[in-house]
Image (cartoon, rainbow, N blue to C red; front, side, top):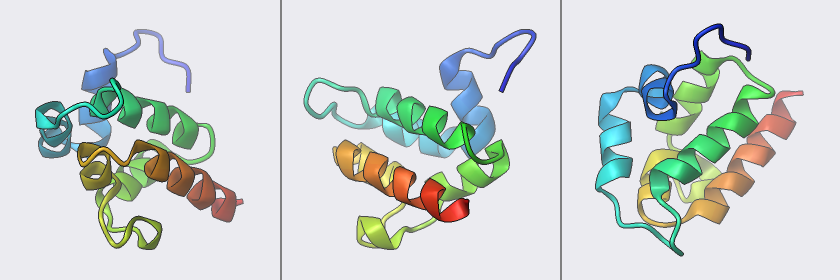
Length: 96
């Protein structure tokens, strides 16, 4: 999505998923040297290529079967970044 005045990445994620989920990511311990917020932004970019921001926001905060019924936010905060990325790709593939 093109923006005339791009939002700061964290601010953009807050606008899409809300403050509490982003705060959860910021409070989490990095896994494999990668910040959970950074991983969430990578996943967001994948989702934005295929779905509207409101659908992406719901996906991040809805328990997912591929993530053992955890939300992607909770899974990212727990260090399961690859699993979340795989779940995002699978969900996007199912949308088309």
